Length: 137
Image (tube, one colour):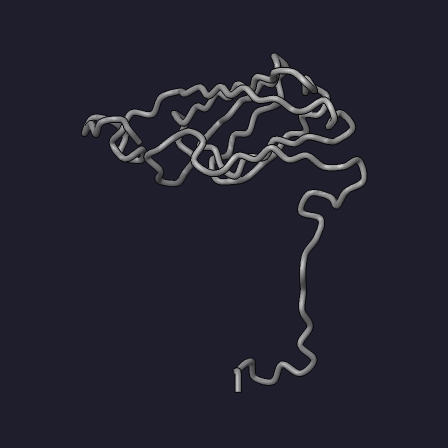
């Protein structure tokens, strides 16, 4: 979003030249959490992200408009420093118009007990016994 407008650049990227970006973040997880499962959850990254935690490749997420997560439990250094590296490449057009690139929504570090409700494992539904015409009266 901080790039200058250039009429010679692709209009599908808002006349801004997309470029590859890197993010790095260090964090610690207390040693007392060593029996928990740890997830990194990303609400959105535009686009084609690749991630490493403590030098271990976590995966590649190509989409720019969907959330995703990684189970990072096997790679966590409990009680010590952890380093996350994220590479984002928005240069390939995805079919929607978006002039930005990078991590553009929340990122979550989630810790759960060994026995827990599955990710997105709950939902609510309703039953209307007599819906009539659907109008409130």
